[in-house]
Amino acid sequence: MNVANLQLEGLLMAVAAINHVLVRKGVLTVEEIDIALRKAEAGETGEERSQGMSASSRDAVNFPIRLLELANQCQPEADMPSFSRLARMVGQMKEPYNDQI
Image (tube, rainbow, N blue to C red; front, side, top):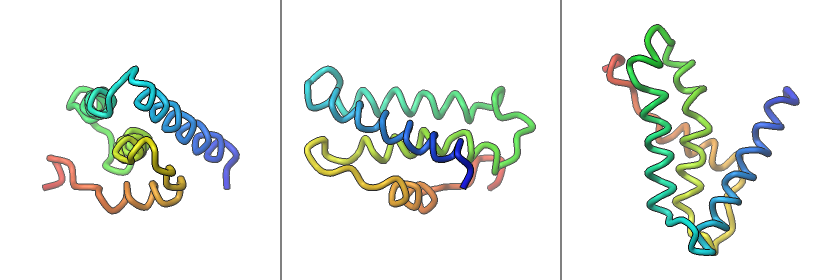
């Protein structure tokens, strides 16, 4: 596996862990993190950003956001699922983009 991919895996899991701490400490709510991630995904899938981008490229851009969205849905006091489990869940929840329907 590419070392950069492993570094991104670690970074995503670190951000997910930080988000859980922020929720546990009452700094942010799960809903606030969810809104921020949804806004990020909307910005990345917006027509202006994704114009001319293939579906696989859009999936690549949105993968980290979707993984963090799923991690955010886990209870902060529960163990975080592994990266591979979260990645599988992202693949299972993927829906076609508007221009693919």
